[in-house]
Amino acid sequence: MKKMFINGEWLEASSGETREIINPYNQEVIATVTEGNEQDARFAIAAAREAFDNKEWAFIPASERSKFVHSIADLIKRDHAQLAELESLDTGKTVEESRGDMDDIAGVFRYFAEIADKDGGDIIDSPIPHSTSRVVHEPVGVCGQITPWNYPLLQASWKLAPALAAGNTLVMKPSEITPLTSVKIFELMEEAGIPAGVVNLVLGSGNTVGAELAANDNVDLISFTGGIETGKKIMQAASSNVKNLALELGGKNPNIVFADADFDTAVDQAMNAVFFHAGQICSAGTRLIVEESIHDDFVHALVKRVSNIKLGSGFDPSTQMGPLISAEHVTKVCHYVETGKQEGATVAVGGGRPEDPHLQDGFFYLPTVLTNCTTNMRVVQDEGFGPVITVEKFQDEEDAIRLANDSIYGLSGGIFTNDIAKAERCVRKMRMGTVWINDVNLYFPHAPWGGYKQSGIGRELGKTGLEEYQETKHVFQNLKPEPVHWF
Ligand SMILES: NC(=O)c1ccc[n+]([C@@H]2O[C@H](COP(=O)([O-])OP(=O)(O)OC[C@H]3O[C@@H](n4cnc5c(N)ncnc54)[C@H](O)[C@@H]3O)[C@@H](O)[C@H]2O)c1
Ligand SMILES: C[N+](C)(C)CC=O
Image (cartoon, rainbow, N blue to C red; front, side, top):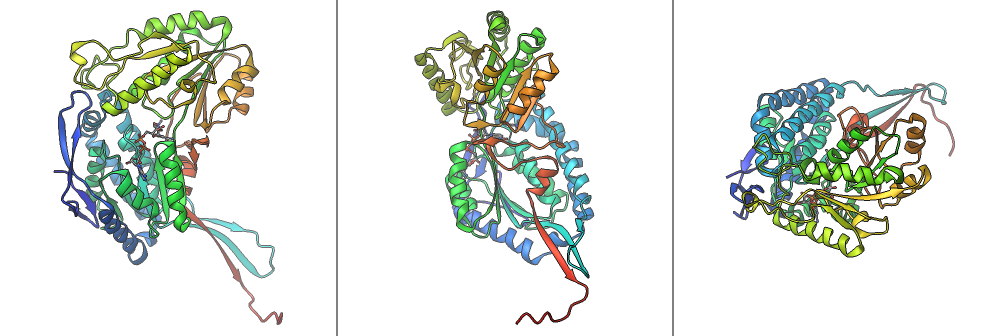
């Protein structure tokens, strides 16, 4: 049985409860994990508090912490193949995608290890005579970190690496559906020699463990990646002690294709934008917005290619798209597409579960293209989080931007055009945290990631991703102290 890691020890939940982890490809039980609750979360928070307040971690030189974080990257590289297979077993994504994730994850630890000791603070030119003024960055304290099921270890790495590099202690709660690679990374952090109490892992549900992390007054920062409704609850709970808050929430991401774009590239990338990991990506380009003059040809070419996408086991090298994460999620995607049909959308391809007898045990949904969509439809506004593209038409540049921005979300967007000036004009007006020109879904450790509007608060990755885990302190020193006789 997989256990939790608290204060340097592998423990079973205080309640003795367990949970079975299911392979979404065939519904087989792949692991049993201990199921923690609020009490276990409080125990872990107390360990992290003690390690932050009364032990050395927060005060060791950043160069020492950097070595620990480098070691974690080395261990991920060593166990790359095993980690990738475990991630695919747990999430259903193809092993090829998981291998790419593991490269990214090692890169994230490497990046934060490298920048950990590069910031010695700033000297301010003090306006007060005979004084010095400087700004230093310090760790925030105890961090609660809550992650989703779609990119379990990748989203964990975006939180663990900067938190450690900055000198914080932490308690992580992975998604209860996909905890396996998170357990493994805590084994690797133990092997890397991270001191007891600095990193703690509590397994369990959002309503118990997650809610405790968000509300507990001994937590100084809560970093959450997940859905918008959960994000709102966390924001509310975090107000109890005015925690620092980082929210990476959902997206309903437009992908604008102008008539002057390279046609074949734009068709190809419109598919990459949505069908990786069966559309279960926050930044999936689910809203395809195509210039009217090429709309019909574009849809025709897209549908032809989408109908050839091969579904199957993530472990079969010929598989292009795996299953959805759970039966509940299949029901949600079915409902989402039905809503679209009732609103007047046309199913150009897909629109249901596959009939292939080999796929009946898995949580599969066909890659789907919905045409005749307009911005006012729920199917265009709501995050379906499945392999479904809605297609809208636009007349001109202004129209394209109006449609693209007509969303409560603002996570990411794409533009396909060969007119660079037009692309730059659009970028300025697009209210999103990331905009790709002639590409989709690219992210790397050096560039910040996060959303405008209701897609979130704060940024992960990049220098800003480290700053999320730092407090800023101004230190002023009077070099000629003497009474001022004010009173
Ligand atoms: N912006 C990003 O970078 C990003 C990245 C990945 C996923 N996401 C979003 O994540 C969502 C899919 O993930 P999900 O279904 O796991 O999301 P979710 O909100 O259901 O769950 C996310 C995590 O929150 C926990 N949780 C649930 N209720 C909670 C509560 N009341 N208090 C504290 N924690 C609670 C869950 O147990 C899980 O660990 C999508 O909306 C997707 O867009 C965003
Ligand atoms: C942030 N990202 C794109 C890696 C995963 C979103 O679900």
